[in-house]
Length: 408
Ligand SMILES: Cc1cc2nc3c(=O)[nH]c(=O)nc-3n(C[C@H](O)[C@H](O)[C@H](O)COP(=O)(O)O)c2cc1C
Image 1 (tube, rainbow, N blue to C red):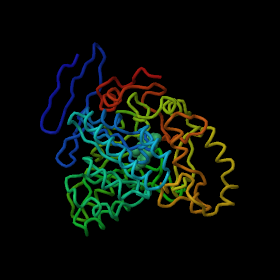
Image 2 (spheres, rainbow, N blue to C red):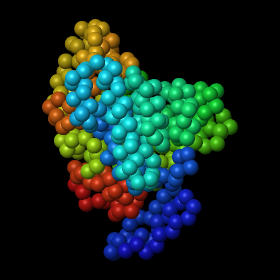
Image 3 (cartoon, rainbow, N blue to C red):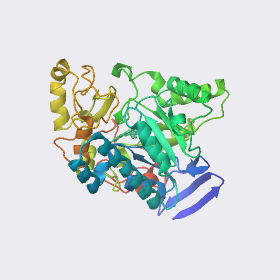
Image 4 (cartoon, rainbow, N blue to C red):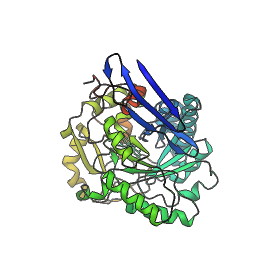
């Protein structure tokens, strides 16, 4: 039984929360503000290819959160567009179909959200069609653009005609944040929020050049939050909401990070395996069944390290990686659309990965366990091997459910 619930201003205070004889910890959930929208402090991160599309992002937004659609290769969710690309596999047609798919997904997510929360679009700077994706996302009504996998120094220019769209860079430490702030300030624009993603724990591409540098103190959330606050002070800027991402899976962590100065936390892997996650059920099973030793970091074709589950394809690729790197040589894009601006396979760069990332991520999306590439963070999942609805995950992280869910 809920004994009392106070709501005042932007702060919801759940206190003296009792569930039929079971005491639940109390929380003070601050909303964070993004372009005048008050949002829950648990954010769903963007996940490509197709893992976070309209259903996941729209479901999170419907609850009052920030749901994020990943923009990469969304045509894969639309049979008619895939058919069109099969008939005409030119780069222009594939790019056009992806923009049509992005438009459809944003509109569907907005409809699902019923005007609540906000819909962001995640766009990788490393993707060749990044400027087109930014323009399309703005035009189609995204509330925010979130850019990682590279420094989005030109984002204010690309979104200049859409001042109401929030701009959110993803960075790993205060040094990178300061660099972006300095460059953007010269363009009279500042980020509306900043994601600080930990290379030590996060899934997918990691924001560091050298894997050996992963344990650097500057990537610790508390350190990064403190140093970033010092940057704001040094630059005489009002505080910008900071969203920390990577390895977060318990409500106590959420509370600690909010107390340490974060405005919100962002999760990826935990949302990917929710009922509403847009990938095939097999995709979710691969993520939830992975043991800690199954999760590895390796060099992606994008020239950045990445973290994923060591599935049969990744295992066999890693065994032959050094041989493939020795024979790396420039070639045409095997999928014909140059998804990445820099691709180690296409450009023949030996120190990068030597596989087609779009194809492997596409296999994962449709649940091909043998051939897919399955990104996952290093830490345990909130509900262990259980697939739960988005609402249960949000409630748990926000402290509305008992501390230890009967889960695993
Ligand atoms: C399957 C998967 C795909 C991802 N793809 C992207 C992506 O395309 N762009 C991006 O910025 N982050 C991507 N991420 C990272 C998430 O947005 C999030 O920041 C990260 O997963 C947080 O770490 P966690 O998984 O430990 O919660 C991906 C994560 C997963 C699990």
